[in-house]
Length: 143
Image (cartoon, rainbow, N blue to C red; front, top):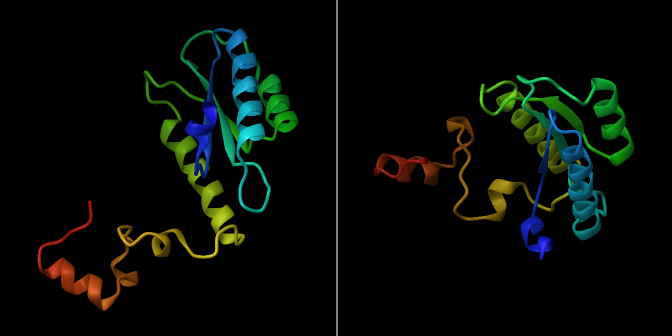
């Protein structure tokens, strides 16, 4: 059933609770499941990052353990975050987005994301086509 969660994934965030060591083992099971059930078109694993949540509390997982876990299990990186206090949430998402974009730039897909779906629009005005500019003037705006 988990294959449905991963369908068409371009990246993954796997979360462990740093105040409970057992959740790191659960995160590794999720990563293993992800790697076994989905891959990119070129056969490489979907880029995944590990978030060690609740960094505002006492941690039972060291940085060394996180670093070893990332290296041994094929994560792109890890971040110590706090969802409650908004610590490194944005930075971790930006990092994952960069990994996904690198996958695009490496030629993973035949066409860029914005050309694959007629409903997807680039946000940069410089990259807009004349047709996009005309529809914008008519009151159709992105987002």
